[in-house]
Image (cartoon, rainbow, N blue to C red; front, side, top):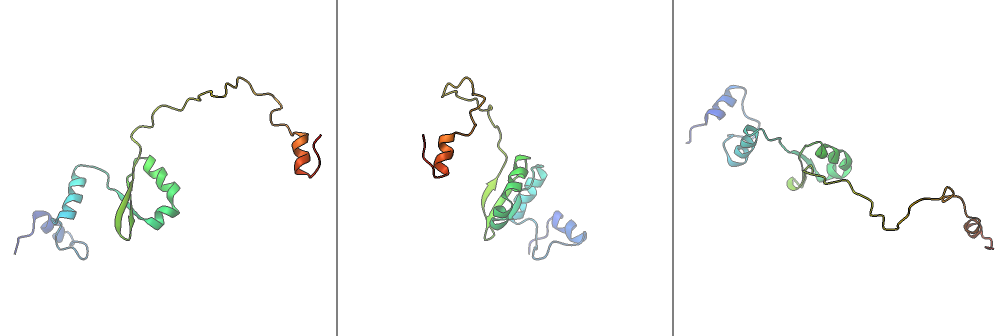
Length: 122
């Protein structure tokens, strides 16, 4: 039988491994430990239902720099990450060549009011 690693022995001495784990040196957990030692933030896992229910909040958290993994039936399916660059702010194209807007541009139009009230237009 293989001898436990130094990490496994120290964790057992400190109170043991989480339930169901026999070693921290198996491949999936080893990759997690590598991420921890590289000081990369761990991804936060949410279910698809949680993602649908709290999408706005998850987008805010991702924009703040957090990485969120969305899982369906316990299997990771998508990753919500912040954008690295947003580019330059949009500049209006001025396609309609509107230079000014009249002060009464949003005033009621009697002809349209008559159409909605069932009357005739003049």
